[in-house]
Image (cartoon, rainbow, N blue to C red; front, side):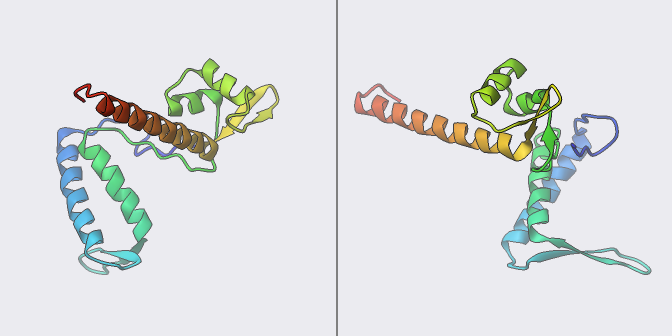
Length: 154
């Protein structure tokens, strides 16, 4: 299950939304850095104003979403326990579906079969992505060290 901000599918933020998101993310980020409160309170002004408490982690997520919107990016939220199709998982990793199927069959990412179809938990796909990103950074660090050792000008 993916959560979208509207029922139109992918929605790229407008210039006005980009500006508002940037301003909002800066203000909320400054607020959360200045306090150790476990919750943020949103107060509705006017007659019969409500007070809504938002957990700090949810506020941090909101700041990340606003930061992406400020860059003009669309945002999709996927619950970590969501089951994905092989195409959805491949899209998340930015790889082809056949390549993903090979990874599944090699046991690099856990999956289960529902009839003839494979299903993958989002948390497993994200864990795999985290691991390959970590390995990539380690290899890049090694290459940079070698380049400096041999005075290659990097």
